[in-house]
Image 1 (cartoon, one colour):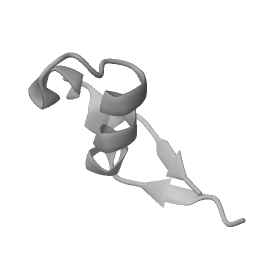
Image 2 (cartoon, helix red, strand yellow; image 1 turned 30 degrees about the vertical axis):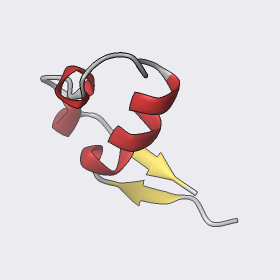
Image 3 (cartoon, rainbow, N blue to C red; image 1 turned 120 degrees about the horizontal axis):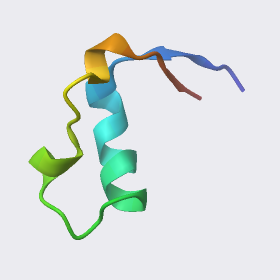
Image 4 (tube, one colour; image 1 turned 45 degrees about the vertical axis):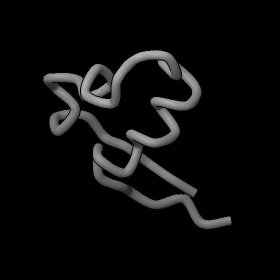
Length: 41
């Protein structure tokens, strides 16, 4: 398994499905997303 940096936008599908599945997709886009570090495998 390789863990590597990903963009905030690449987290949206999983974030939506796991954290806020009943909310619209725009709800899960946080104001400071681009300031954080995101990783995917």
